[in-house]
Amino acid sequence: MTIKTLAAAVALTFVPALAFAAGCNYGKEELTMSCAAGTVYDSASNSCVATTT
Image (tube, helix red, strand yellow):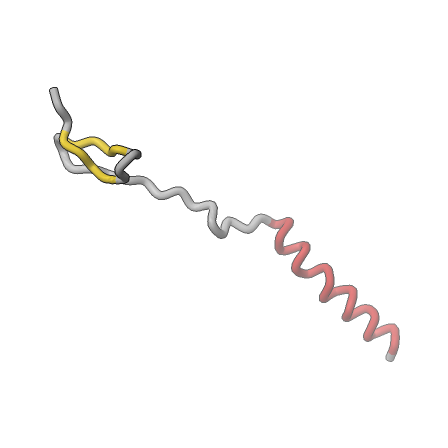
């Protein structure tokens, strides 16, 4: 019984490490901002502003 318990403890210890090594993409998504025609994105104000030509 002790060997089974030890094996289970070792397995449960390494499962999260293996999942992390496989690659977690949480929080790494990249969002893109699209503006209407005639406007451009201004990163200082985080909004679309009209273009001046």
